[in-house]
Image (cartoon, rainbow, N blue to C red; front, side, top):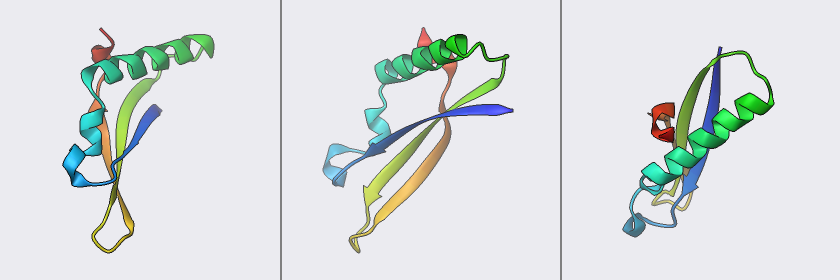
Length: 79
């Protein structure tokens, strides 16, 4: 069993960089700490955790596109 924690990031355009770039090492540490706290509070048995990032970007035709980055970072980033 794998428990997935997902950070969803969007950008209005390409000038600000990719949405995944907004998930900085500091943000990764915060997400990992919150995940560990969640696991502790729920008294969950040990399970594998995965941290994904979903990028939401406008496409040229006006629609939105999504890209899932599975395993974008690890719990070791909780430092």
